[in-house]
Image (cartoon, rainbow, N blue to C red):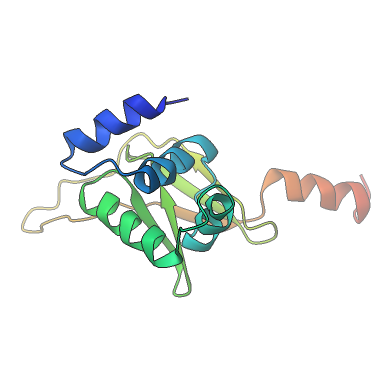
Length: 142
């Protein structure tokens, strides 16, 4: 867990003023690792920060993305999730429970001569092992 002081130092190193709301939004992203939407962050933090708005959450996430502190994950046209882990890794989204899981990948080929690569993304969708095991336990014979 990152202490608030460490998060404050990280924000300031990136040239971002470390307001209370920014500290709490980034702390949530690091702590929860649930690849949240703007709405998820807003709901989680609005009890603690009654003056927080969805616009504030969105604007701060866009700022964090510009400063390469978060990655925006677009699994479909209607949902953007955010990940504070900016290392190269893949994502798996379960179609049943809608959880998003990280997985390691060795590398992504970046040797494309004549092209400028701006993003590297690996997304899988399907049914996660938890949902599959529930399915087997309730609906399918062993």
